[in-house]
Amino acid sequence: MDLDSKEKYIDIKKVISGKNKTLAKWMPGFVMRYIKRIAHEDDINEIMNAIGHLHGLDFVRGGLDQLDTKVIVKGIEYVPPTGGCILAANHPLGGLDGIAFLKAVGMVRSDMKFLVNDVLLNIENFHPLFLPVNKHGSNPRKFMKLIDEAYASEEATLVFPAGLVSRKLSRGIIADLEWRKSFISKAIKYKRDVIPVHIGGRNSNFFYNLSKIRNMLGIRANVEMFYLADEMFNQRGKSITVTFHKPIPYTTFDDSKTQQQWADYVRARVYETEKK
Image 1 (cartoon, rainbow, N blue to C red):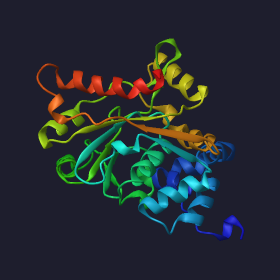
Image 2 (spheres, rainbow, N blue to C red):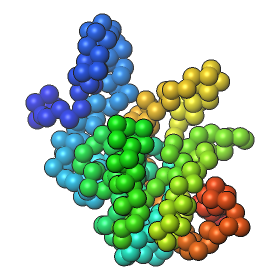
Image 3 (cartoon, rainbow, N blue to C red):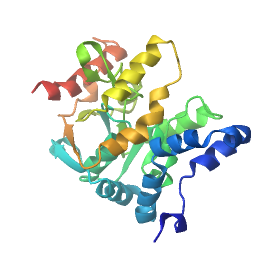
């Protein structure tokens, strides 16, 4: 069946028109085509037409199959099959890493909530697993209440403490920026052990160089995030390794360090994987 005769889950022109009709009307055709290509409109619509009827972990597995992406899991014995816990991971890719993370945890349990604020939120099929992080939205108290409820529950809570995709740091090292301490404060408050998780992978040099140039020019908007869909499809046919580390008891996070120092400590534990 021709793609034009199938349901269109993503229509870039319609999205732009909905936000700014004048811009959509006067935007040159070649610019619109470029945006559609970078956003992989046709590819995403093709995948969604194949698996759009699936939800939750079934959708996760279906998406990875469609992208021909293999998830290699190590240390799965460290993921408890029941009970509340916090799984804190690095964020190397900006989309596919989160999907791989979900599949890996899903090998042991299906009761989980993933705190996310990135591109994956736009896909409703993930919603049974996702909890949106929107502290600056119209109702931040509502979101904070939902987040607290997730940490307090007996479900597994998955987090990317950096909040942003990894960047190229000094000496060309690809790693997360500073981790936010909130997962440590929640671990202490709700007595939840923390499982450090390392996810392998990296984006293209173009992505990292664009980020560097943007910062050099003093541009605050994360322009490089516009290319995350393209980066995701660049991973097609590759494998992603998810490594779980030994849980850190919540009692570890005492007053000998600040909560930010404990967050830095867990981050360092995650990156020990790359040194082995």
